Length: 156
Image (cartoon, one colour):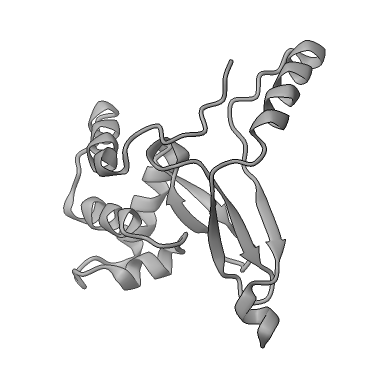
């Protein structure tokens, strides 16, 4: 099996792909779900539920609805936890709906930066072959988080 490290669904089609996932599983794209999805599609970094709620344009959507929506989207594989090192989980669209990337996480301020692409492609191909032979296990995805200190914190 070859790993797919490029974009699986064009970002411009992510909304349609997510909507299709919801409908195929028997869910509607309600106003709160659409609003949360809009925030995640426009995001510049993984967001906590509180941050998603704060970015909503419609102040009529309560925090509980945002939690329920994020939980549903997570259960459906639409969003994933990007990091929880700051004590609260931060979410982003899953790799199925975005470009494959890894994260640089500042251990001082908690800032998360995307590291586009995958520098581990060749090593992961070899690893997949080895674990398939020795354990009968097939690696289908991976998640890499590089921890350190961001430029802002290092210069402070």
